[in-house]
Length: 71
Image (cartoon, rainbow, N blue to C red; front, side, top):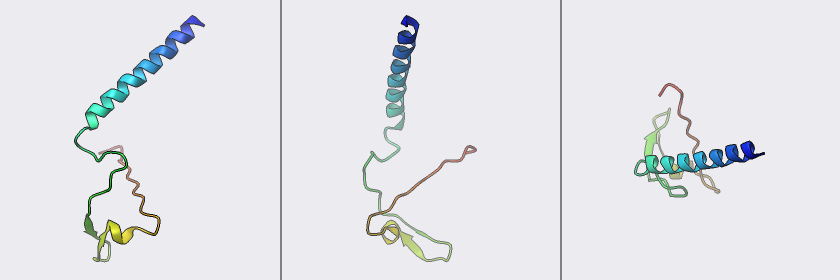
């Protein structure tokens, strides 16, 4: 039981330390959670200009970005 408690405490402490490191690492290069995206526009496959506002529906827009393993 003592070994299990020690492992649990070590696991929680490691998670806390990694969380702090991740916060320090991400400062300055991303928007804060819940922030509005900047107004951007780009051409779609047919050459028409699309903005985030033009893509949003009545309940908003969800962007799902995935970084590939070979980036």
